[in-house]
Each structure stands twice: as C-alpha cells, then as structure tokens.
Length: 347
Ligand code: SAH
Ligand code: SF4
Image 1 (spheres, rainbow, N blue to C red):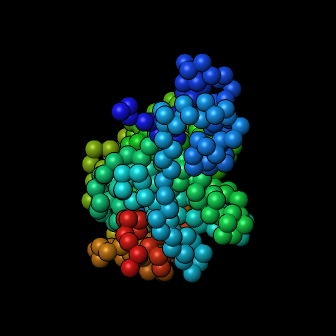
Image 2 (image 1 turned 90 degrees about the vertical axis):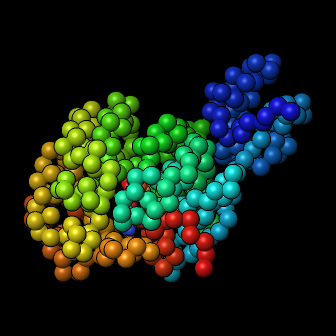
Image 3 (image 1 turned 30 degrees about the vertical axis):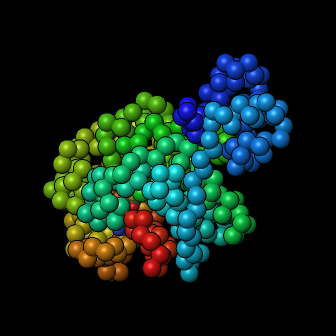
C-alpha cells in the first residue's frame, strides 16, 4: 500500500502542484488550504465545496494528522499549560499566557533539547526529535482557539520559548512562522512573534541573511565566559565574542534591536559585578533587557535571587540608561513557567 502523506506538511504551492499533476484546477488548493488552516477540518469529507472525486483523491493520497490536546492545566493566575500528543506518541507543551489586553502563546520547537543548560528542565530530557512545521504551527492554532474559548481573547503574541532550541530546527521554525504571518495562514504581523535562542552565532547570521522580520531574544544569563561555560555548556564552543559579532551583524542587516533574557539565580549571576559586565556587553548594539525570575525545577542546585539582589541588579542596569523589563513568573503552580516544561504528567 502506498504510504499516505500528512497534508498539513504541504505548503499551498505544493498542494497546488499536486492538483495540477492530477488534472484538477489549481485554485482548489486555496480552498483545501483554508479548510485545513482556517476551518480546521478533520476530514476531507468536511470540505463540502470540493467535488466528490477530488475528496476521494485527497483521501487516497493524504491523511490529516492534527496534534491532539492530551491535557490542560489552568493556573490560579489563568495561565494554561497544554500537553499536546504528537502522532508518534511524544508529548510536547505549549502555554497560553493571558493578561488584560493580551494573549501570548508560548510554543515548543523540539521534543526535548540537547543543549543541556543546567538550570532548565527541558535540557534534562535530551533531544527526541525536531517538530515539523505543521506541528509548530498547530500549537499556535490550538492555543489561539483556547484563548478565544476560555477568555474571549484574540491571540496577540507568539513566543518560541517552550521546549527546544528553535535555531536547531531552523527550516521548520521559519516555515511555521511564515504560515503564521501569511495571509493564507493567520495573517499575524511578524513583529508580534519573538524567537528565543540560547545564542548560536552561525544561525543568528543566517537569520540576518534571511532578513527575518520577527523579534530575536537571546538567553544571555551571564556576560562572563567562564560563568556562562559552567551553566550553559553551549557557550564553550560559541563564546560571547562570537555571539557579539553575530548580533552586531544581525542588527546591521535587519535594523532590529536585540532582546536579552537574563535569568537571576542566587549567588550565581546576580552580583553588581555581573550587572556591570552585562551593561558593558550591551554597548555594541541597541538592546532591550528582560530580567526573568528563576523558576524552581526538580534540580535543587539553583535558587532564585533574593528580592534585595534582584532589585539592586535592575536598578544598576537602569542607572546605565538601559531599557529593562522585569518578568515576574506566571503559571508556576502548574510548572508552566519558562524552564519548567518537561512533559511532566499531571500529579
Ligand atoms: N532554547 C531557547 C528557547 C527555550 S527556553 C532558549 O534557551 O532561549 C526559554 C527561556 O526559558 C530561556 O530564556 C531559558 O533560559 C529560560 N529558562 C530555562 N530554565 C529556566 C528556569 N528554570 N527558570 C526561568 N527561566 C528558565
Ligand atoms: Fe535548551 Fe533553551 Fe533549555 Fe537551554 S534553556 S536546555 S537551550 S530549551
């Protein structure tokens, strides 16, 4: 028997060429695409504006494998963590973070991650596999529907800050974000999308060459190579100098400023000397800084900074005229906060 392909992995153009090869009118591709991505059809039989013979042909050649919501956990602060089951049984996680006038989808790019940052629960899993473009895109669609159903909110922002390193699944992530921003997909402005990376210089240069329009956030967490090497092993081969060069290149080519994520961990990277090194590192390009609160994982090695150190760190950066946002954690009671995503089942 011929192996059927998941239609959701096909772009509009690919569907169109398939139809042409089979003597069908190419404009039907747009109808099929809309059924899949706008109306979320579960079967070709639902596509009532297609002829019976075309529905039959599609059925013979393709499957429609959506990802399934396996579990939902709602935090006391209204954050919702979703466990999605993939067609091969793996579980990944996405999060809906609602505020008064915003709804942000935090989505995954890989099943697990092999970069092994010491403070991160996902890093403990190792990498199982990359997500396909449609699996990435579908998380957005599902979380968008949840935002509407549960809170009557439209999805306003997307952050690639769930499980995995997006720049190690480059093509699929870019294809998915293309679908998010395309008029045939969700028509969302790329300025509402943020990709968060551990900071891989070669791939950041590629983003610049590809002239991406979404925001780039880099998880810096220390501007000192010795320290960064210790808790982010990826830094040993991609040090802060190489990272700086790639960010200068990115800024020059795209005109965009860089967002730095900085996770404050007690006694590790939260001294005034750390703040000073960080401020120095920010001098090479326009930046925006997000200071993040550390969320506990099963690893007891790290603790969040004391309020005193936290405030002193932020005050120091502000005194250097840097743009600083403080991100207090959301959804901690359900392990939905950054770095806590590890496919843990409900207790
Ligand atoms: N791999 C990418 C994106 C996923 S991680 C990256 O590293 O940027 C998303 C964010 O969560 C990163 O900024 C990461 O450093 C942060 N994070 C990891 N563990 C955390 C924890 N225990 N508490 C708070 N943030 C954490
Ligand atoms: Fe991977 Fe990001 Fe976690 Fe590091 S912080 S292990 S890069 S998911």
